Amino acid sequence: METSIDSTRIQTKTSQKSSVSGQKKPRVAVIGSGFGGLSAAIRLQAKGYQVKVFEKRDKPGGRAYVYQDKGFTFDAGPTVITAPQALDELFQLTGKKMSDYVEMIPVSPFYRLLWDDGYKFDYSNTESELFAQIREKSPGDENGYRRFLKYSKEVFDEGYTKLAATPFLHIWSMVKVSPQLIRLSAHRSVFATVSKYIKDRHLREAFSFHSLLVGGNPFSTSSIYTLIHFLERNWGVFFPRGGTGALVRALVKYFEELGGEIVLNSEVEKIETKAGGVTGIKVAGQPVWACDAVVSNGDVLHTYKDLLKDEPKARSSETRLEKSDYSMSLFLIYFGTNKRYPQLAHHNVLFGPRYKGLLEDIFVNGVTLPKDFSLYLHAPTISDPSLAPPDSECFYVLAPVAHLGKLPIDWKVEGPKYAEKIMAYMEEKYLPGLRESVVVQKIFTPEDFKSELNSHLGAAFSLEPKLTQSAYFRQHNRDSKIKGLYFVGAGTHPGAGVPGVVNSAKATAGLVFEDIKVSDLHA
Image 1 (cartoon, rainbow, N blue to C red):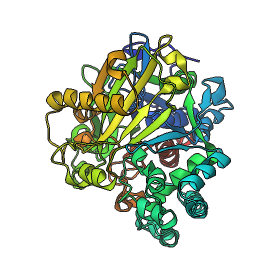
Image 2: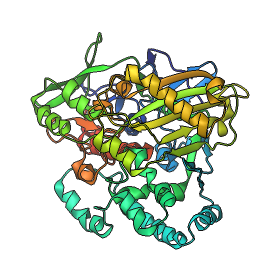
Image 3: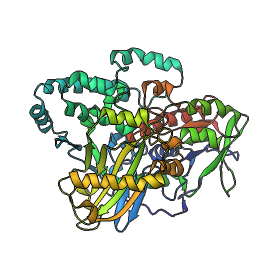
Image 4: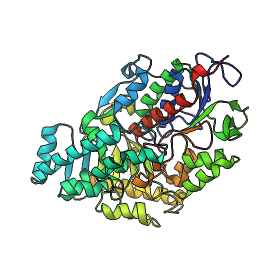
């Protein structure tokens, strides 16, 4: 299921001809090999374009990077895989099946939710278990949850099924869906909507935290994002055997089989333009790779500000994006232990003593690092023990924190202190003997998001997913001024999360198909 990855370059099995040199296949450069970039590259390559992916780091995957140390395999980024059919659709383009490349393991419960006061809730897709827990905690909320699930399905039908892969390029496209958004009370926040149906404090938190998975504050993110709840209930939560990196390798292998090419250790320093249109990609120390279109899976502001610094038509977009609101950042600790913790689930959410107050400190106040925290604890060896040595456990834990614009601290100094505080808390509350069992540990801070991923302000999910920064009001999948420039990934429509960025690739590839038709280019 795996493909070997050279530290410098992934070679293609075939070479293809370029329209730039007067031949048939239009050439498309994709910047970044995250899920969005790979998905767009596959769609374009399968349609007959010659695609070359440029990746800054030494491995493909973008945020879905992989660290390996002392027999432990750590997925660096996305670990909750939902809507797997969106990924399988990529393989179906050429009559293949994703299952021939990677095994997807269903995860149950979806999440184990643990509160600082000792309450535990297994968020499961087994209805009898789910409703029994709701009844036991708050009998009056069972009917309320049923009504919330029905509402979530309505939002899913409108916001995901109909619009997730539809580009919003004109204000009229937003006007047309406004009646539905009004009917669904899209102006309400996720938390306010959940609270309309559910009264118990713990259950309100259990069914409103999902927007954090795409970088949104439940107290300000549009209720449209409650669709994530139904999306999970509808299709389940999965994890690739071998880790998320195995899924990346499957996409890379498939892309190579189609004739695509990925070059690693190749940070793009400039998008070349002429007469207001893209003409090529420049990597330091390499000749310009001439192309007909560029699809950026990189940070949207970085693309305009740094890669198009000599293009006047990029300045208005740069200014707009600098004034936009960005998601929170993350502080992550990857660690392996020489003992197992079977009391955990694969995905664990550890709620601290505060909910709204902590989120206000992260999203609104900033300035100082809060003394408390809520955590997501990933324990993939619960599902796949091969990710760690025998009798060992593999983890990462993340704490949402304010981005660098709100929290200007020195993470080189504060990071190790914060990591020790988090590890001590988990040992006291959930994982006895944790610190003495740790055999490998690595931290990743907001500064690393900025330096490693070129993320503006170290934001982990690009633009904050507010209603005023969604759909038409989000970065468009196709630039309206610079011909041949397209975007894919968390910063464009529909937004962050694996289903979001994979659907953004479908929307963006469709625009390339409209603008640059293979059949229109002649030898």
